[in-house]
Length: 489
Image 1 (cartoon, rainbow, N blue to C red):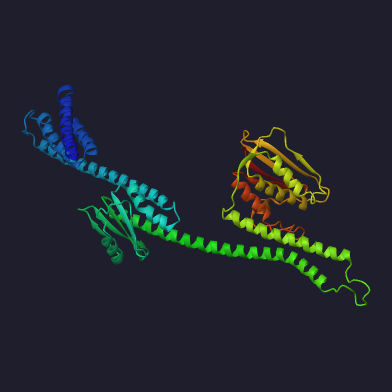
Image 2 (image 1 turned 120 degrees about the horizontal axis):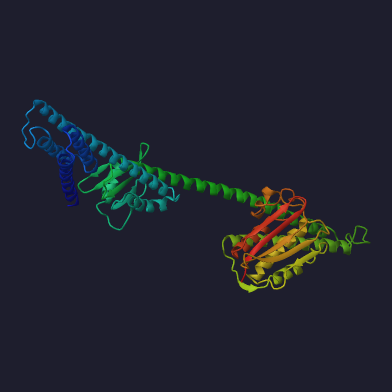
């Protein structure tokens, strides 16, 4: 109905335009035949560009009649006295029809170019949507909806040769039957039903058919449907390849992590076990008396020293096992935190009290201003963070080097930042991000200082669980400052 109304409006506009040109040329300006012919041709050209070929042909015919009646002698009759005027009238009609055809052809070409551009824009937007997911299962569920949203069709469905499921854009089948999709998958040939506005396109990946696409309510060209099918096939293959690559990379990293873990754990566990074994063997291998029966093989002082070694190395071994277990629990999110508002002074004081034997040769300066707001934290776990950081500062600093602990409120009193500064050897720039990774230890300190490389990783996991951030600033030869933030509570 709308098309018929628009067409009728075009015919009426053409007739009115002929009347207006005739009135102006004949009544008002009294133009000659040549000028009026050009004016009529311009009018035909405008109608052709605005409305189409049929309206332009209609105007060409009525323009020819008006030109003959009003501008070719004898005036106001359809009789032509001069034979040359027959040639002029025929030339005018042919020119008008030719102009109409050329203008309509140009108009169709412009419309076609606009449609192709719009289709290309839709295909580009569609290809960008296909890149939004690398998970094949998720992508298959999203593709039908992407097709509907991008190309304005009623519904869409996807079927793969390797899967029995049908992925649809909505709950209705809408003529996209499973058997039709599977049949096109098997045959590998498209099937288009313009009467029912149904189209089934195989998804080609080279010469191989990986599935089938069905669309309903489609006015898309076959070329566009083939392009959509190719994009879908490529995206599915890409998602599958990315998934396989991710699995292979995860397996490789898992193997590498296992190797690093075994190497680190083996090395760190072997040292205390070797010391314990050597001490126990020395104690068990010596009788109470020397061969002459006069003096014990080991003095009481020597036995006490060996037993002390056994005790210290047992504690070290127990700590290594505890850190590994805690890191595993943190990674699995199985650690329960008890958050409460508390002063930061408490975990700092408890950590210093626990490490007082280690800090005998390191003066500690604590600068926590009075009135600093409380932190929203689990005090026990933050104390553990402080223990790790202060212990590292003591282990990596030379004897007598001071350790400074400060706290300040930042970000408009929204976050509390705690810093631990040492006078150690410092950390290279490229290592500053690596020191927080599990099992990583500074390349220059691996032999000099014992450790598993899990302490900072544990600290990072705890701080991030509080909604904070753990970082470091360092300069070689001038020490390091480890800092972490906690929300004010």
